Image (cartoon, rainbow, N blue to C red; front, side, top):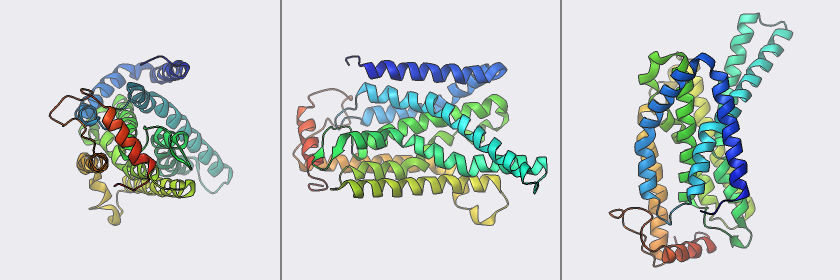
Length: 310
C-alpha cells in the first residue's frame, strides 16, 4: 500500500481525536482503557469473521484502518460534543422559557440529547464513509471504482459501528462498571441499527440514476434512525408497555441480526460474481490468497450493469 497525502490527514485526525478523548477522561483513563479492551475482545470474533469473508475481492487495508479509526476515535469525539451542545442548549432554552424548573430543564436536555441527537447524528456518522464512497465512485455512466456495492458498504459500515460501539461502552464502563454484563452486546446493537442504511447504500450503487440512489440511501437512513430512536425512547421510559417484547430484546439478538445482514450481502455479491463466471477463493482458503484478477473483472461487469446479472 503506497502512502498517500490523505493518509497523513487521516492519521493526524485520528491522533488529534485520541488526544481529545484521553484528555477528557482524567482520572477515568485507566477504567476507560480496560473497558475498551473488554469491548474489543467482544467484537474480535466479528472482526475476524469479516476479515475471513473479505475476498470479493479483498478490501484495501486503507479502508480497514480508516473505518475502524473513524468509529473508535473521530465519531466518539464528534458525537460527545454534539450531544453536550444539544443537551446544554435545550436546558438553557427550557430555563429561559420559565416553564420548567432547573431540575426538569436538565432532564429535558438529557432527553433531547438521547432521543434526538444520538439517533440522528450517530447513524449519520456511522453511514458516512460508505455514503462518501458511493458519491465519489458513481456517476450516470456507471461505477468508476470497485469499493462500492452491498459488501463494501456493509463491511466498512460494520467496522465503523463496532469501533464506535466499543468506545461508547468503554465510556460507560469508566464511570459505572457495575452494568458491564448488560452492555457487552451494545457494539453489535449499534451495527444492527445501522444495517438497514448500509444495505440501502450498498444496493443504491446498483441503481441506474442518481435520484434513485439518493432516495434509497435516505430511506435506509430513516429506518436506522427510527430503530435507534425507538431503542433510546424505550430505555428512557422503561414503563412504556409498547416497547416490551420488541426493541427491548434487540441487544441479545443483535449478533444474530448482524450475522444475517452480513450473510445476505456476502451471498448476493458471491452469486453476482458467479453469474459473471468468476470463482472467488473458497472459504476453506485463507483470505487475500490466490489470484484476484478474474474476480476484479467480474465485479466491474456487475457494477457496470446495475442489477443486470444479479
